[in-house]
Image (cartoon, rainbow, N blue to C red; front, side, top):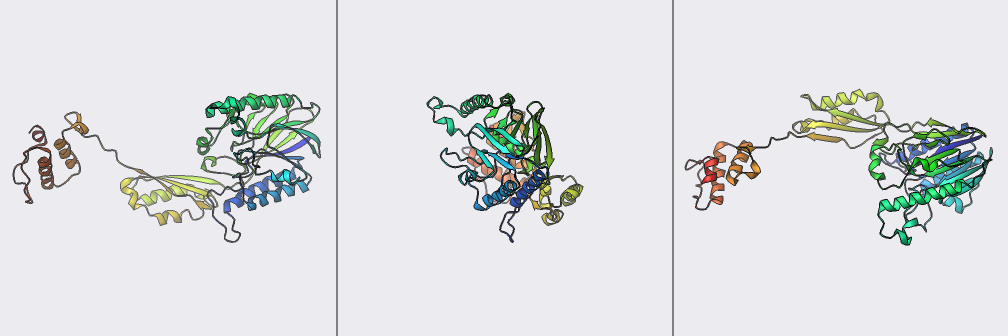
Length: 430
């Protein structure tokens, strides 16, 4: 029986909601992601897996820093030294936009690192594991530059280019699957967006230009298990033969992943029968959103009570506080008192204040919107709405009448009205 550890979307270098550790100079979130990766690898070694597959996005950036490369290489060396084979497909964060540049994981191939196999193009590789040979159908991320240079792709839209990539890759995968030896276990390792996959809210907007593959793309002859990456939420898209699985990201990237478990997938592929995937959770850094609504006479106390309701979740968490507050109560919020209630958090995101302003009723004049009223009538209504002193209002109206109406007498500079001021309706018809 073949035992596999399936990981994806490790994103080493993700530093959202972190700070520098003065002792090491490393971002605290880098340490979080490495800790989650270590926990997954510890579990894989404890399960005595034969093969570790990483379905893309090892790093956050296509150009990882030497520190990020060092930390990943240390962990790969540990796995290989334990006798486990490693297979990595390139994800969209690993592949440069230019086809001629190396991917962020290409260094393992250049150094001919024992026990590590890579794929940047669709194709079949045979890997010798402690459990015997396994065939891996690689399906790395495809960039548009691979097809955009073709003459028939000239002036195509992004949607048309995506559809062309989907059809090209479907045909290639099917052709390669038909070359698989049915006597050997076979898996597909890919980095792709599959139609119907559930995506976190904060990532939805960033994935609108992805090529999207139908689930039937992976209904391939001879394939025992489909190990996917790219979607950060763990999910099983198909339980059949083969199972199609996203393990999800190894740690939380943003608040869109707040409620998601993070981890990896342990897979057993028997000599006969269906592959059996099992999700194994890691202790990723928790994210907690607190929603507070100011309704009483003491806004700060309203917020403090909302924080207390989630008090047990705050320690060592990345916390976001959202406050709905009426505009007139906003100055009464005591920031220091509020932040004191959150001092146990690992990181406090900027506090979001949703200021609720009273909606003014549209003022009308005889059923007519104020924007259609004569200028002096509109000014009179506006000044009344501003609740100016009546005497001052009369003075301003006289100045306005002098500017608007030809022949109107210049206003006197006295503190009070020098003559009776016509009503707004009379001024409009004068």
